[in-house]
Image 1 (cartoon, helix red, strand yellow):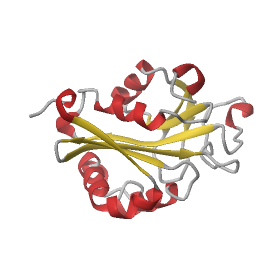
Image 2 (cartoon, one colour):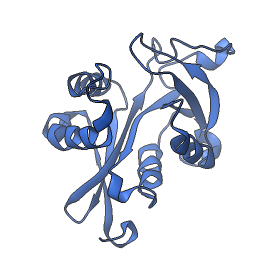
Image 3 (cartoon, rainbow, N blue to C red):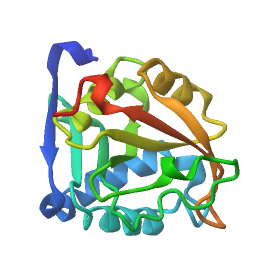
Image 4 (cartoon, one colour):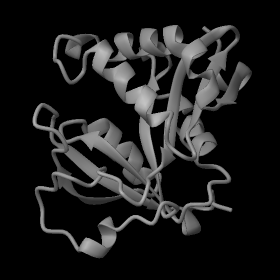
Length: 189
């Protein structure tokens, strides 16, 4: 197998390209979340519904990692609008000023997923950095399932800090909300 450093290529796409990327994005999602596809929240129809909603947001961007002709993973995000419901369902006490959105304050990292054969080779970090490079927002946020310790550890090592736990939907898992200061992380403009 080719190693990521030998032939990794990352492409950047916008909302207008989402439909043509549907099949490979859903294939990777189905592979990564194979054990959860029977759960209504995690099923393919609900995931595609979320993706198409994300694509309507300002600042939507998707970055895709390719090794030779094979897609190994992707990451996507968008700017949280002033009326965002991203922060709903907090289970912990939290300073309300941390949850205030202006329409330009925060980029939400909605997905980072890497196919199994290419995990732990630095591709996730490269996608993360490609997604956040040149963002104008002051911070980024992401939600990681509370029991996903490997992902939480990686994000912490990349400079993310825990904000608190939340359950945004009745049928969703509990997530750890994490934030990254883009002004000090070196990715914001």
